[in-house]
Length: 285
Image (cartoon, rainbow, N blue to C red; front, side):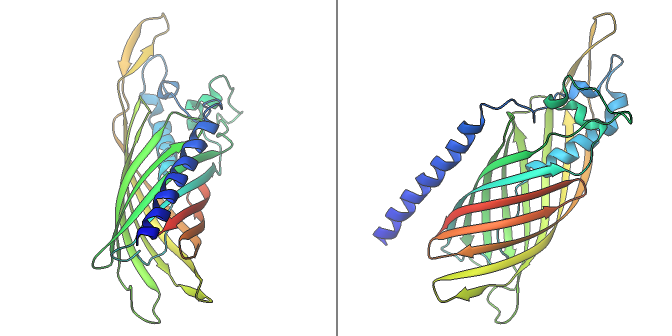
């Protein structure tokens, strides 16, 4: 047990160092993925930009919410996992709402009034999971959106309904809640509900492979803080985007390779406007 604790301590600080280096090494890039909500407004206020605000916040809610990155089976009552994950997302279409991003601060719209989305939204995430009795599991996540000042924090609870039944695939349900920090103009709350199914095969008694798939319903609420609007003659006033609610329907497929300690995962996520692919490297005890 003492040797296992030493291994765990070393791996914990190694993964923490990898997470820190990833953030520091990408912080030198321009903040193309930040945004200013005032770009969705005009001299008369923000009423005309409500649809763009709703679309923009729906996209960012999907981009920032962590991927599933776990089979339906839990870690077990004494299990613990820590992992560094990276999620790479892109938009499947241009939209007028992308004019709010820093990338398009000085850009001109296309003939149809749309702007191109940033080429890539990449997040670096620290993900921790802990098994509980009765096939329950809790998780905590902290991630950063590269080329931005936006961070995301969240927590979740999962229940594996069919865990331990021979010859049956594992089936689980999960609830996840998270919010963002670093976006001074925006308040955003995500509530994610998903269901996953998986099946594990042993590989010679030294490793296991677990493909999994599932469906996720992401509900988000967003509103702006008071925004300063400059009028045609230089006068200032305040306006605000009132709270809006969005629904994101997403599917995901993935595979996890697990050895005695190390874990490697790959996952793809398919949404209405945002598509994502990700990789996980971690340690499992």
